[in-house]
Length: 280
Image (cartoon, rainbow, N blue to C red; front, side, top):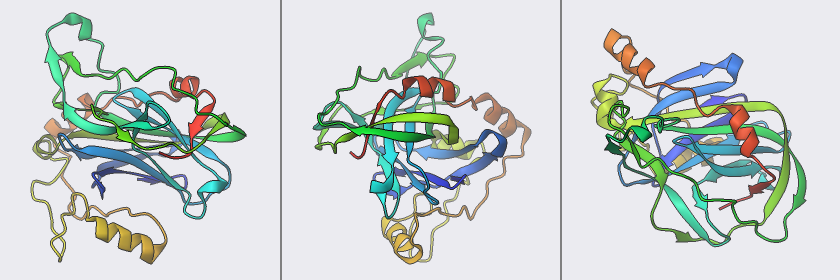
């Protein structure tokens, strides 16, 4: 998705995910789309500033839980691109994002446990750089994930997005303290569901078109993506060559029922704090 000079996309195990049903809400600086989730596979959130002028931080929300931010600033040149691949528990341990099975229960205490479920959000703010932190600052707490929801509230959401149970060893790059200001520049919202659910609701075509060389356009091969970067000097945005019909009454009703508001900007701003990681 591309809006206000920023481009955002999701990769699943290194391959860019095809987006469907894109909508742009220019007055709200928001862009939304649907993507197919893949059970048991890791994913990452990427973004790029195509017209860099000031430092910005991108705050990533997964199923309504905020997972910290990443910074684009002068040190990001020449590509001004970054990614969020998971939750950093310490200076050396990172838990990757992964799609997994969503459980259900008849316990009524879980009736309100659906805020942000089925969504991956990215909200970008302008920031002032305050200082480079000499020592790594530990997170205040670990994210609280939505593993289970009430059986009456699943609404076809069979997968959840969260953290892998296994961490990877990856020393972190020093952090920078920042101060956000103004309103969000843009917010991207990726609404995910299993592939068969999106196909059943005609959001995604049942037949995935293949390119001449056999590459699946659902994700677009990694070699193809790298070639685009080299040829165009920018990051890829794969064109949807087979638009799905979403005009049916049943589909419209399902989309409306399963479309919630992404995490509100005010809530994200309260959580920004002072630290932003430069890299994973």
